[in-house]
Length: 267
Length: 333
Image 1 (cartoon, each protein chain N blue to C red):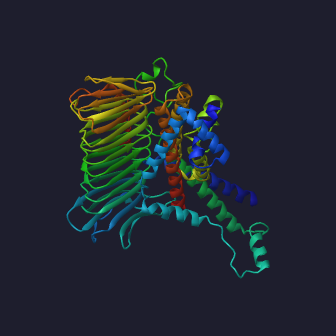
Image 2 (cartoon, chains in turn brown, orange):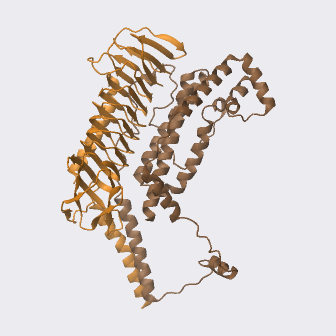
Image 3 (cartoon, chains in turn green, red):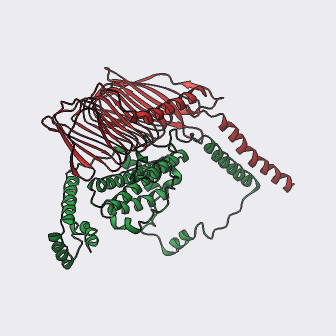
């Protein structure tokens, strides 16, 4: 029961609980100092977050995103278009038959050859894999101390694709979803957005981003395990939230980069 | 006849990609100019600009190097391929440089710009190294695969790279530096600092700042600089150590947190346990606030003249690798 209320403190703060649940939780808060303490911390975090100033995005960013959106917008029918015109327009490309002369066919083949050549060309001229040591063992031997929560060094984990779904929390870890729930939603949305634009990114950049997302995922995993072992540890809670925020920011950055590349490509 | 035509077409389709692939092997990544292509030094172009104008450069590959002078004019020089053209667009508030390429790959240019000292700079690139020296205006730099270097600038600077080292040497003003897969090095900066990385260390030396936040996920964070009495300093990492050099007579309250790491001070401190794995110690009047957090690394405290803790070795190794890779690329040109 205690854990159940602890997991609903965020909803309580967001005024998403119904009246009866509110009263029950407030009664619980009167007898559970731990939940009361977490609630107070959540209020502090919210107050601090409210005081933060939004950093304005670069002026050129929206222009690029807008260009990308406009380039791929759905073309609406003009107001005065008649029904047959609409029907004819909607059939275009679906039922229409094409025929080509020999010179046209040769030109088409040459175009195909050029495109395939260009693709090979672009593939081969892609930059080398990222310099750096994503597969390296991390610094110092502190992680190998007895009691350390880690299961593998950061960076040794295989990179996960940018588009894969987040692994669902399970077992005892599922109980500790309090500080990360809003982040999980943002991450899922960003992954979807990024999946749509992924092909616009350079393969080397995708590799770098995936490696770094894997590093953050491992850090999140370690923090979750630590929190499962020590649920009252406020440092670990804050650290987990901070690491989740970092993942959201990296995904946002990747999405903006892909959108910008997309807009560049459409110009 | 039809069979012959089909065979010819098949040959063309097969040979053109092979030819393109052969050409691609001769492509130089750094300058994006093929070995057989002639690099054309762009004749210097000097344009008079009114105060308040922003310089915007978008580049694909190559480099952007900006120096400054006291004139209200901008000098543009660039090394480019014969197949690329540089477009200069002027709007009411900006002067924009772009590359128009006649190939099916984006153009690559090495810009050498001399700009008015006051000029606001917005520089971006993909495979582009970017460096700016002696600017007094706002500087915003974004690159994907490239290093960013800022020397002796004054004013707000926002610097970011996905796969590149961020280096700031000297300067005054707020610095926001972010790399994803490399380190961030800030030397002798005066002003607020915000630095972050994911897979790289953060090294801040000789800073004079009353607001410093530096964090990474995988790498050490090192700070050697003044601790202002009214200052706030936060250093955090998940996997790496925190190494802070500070005079033991500082007036600071230190909050130290770790999950499975340790705390190691070269001068005597009395640690008071606040909560599990969270400690506090006060030096002098305790006015400045320092938050030091490492999930699974050691937090080192030392005097400024003492040898840096060994935790920086990985970061230095990584830098060496980075420099070696760069020199390999240079020698391969």
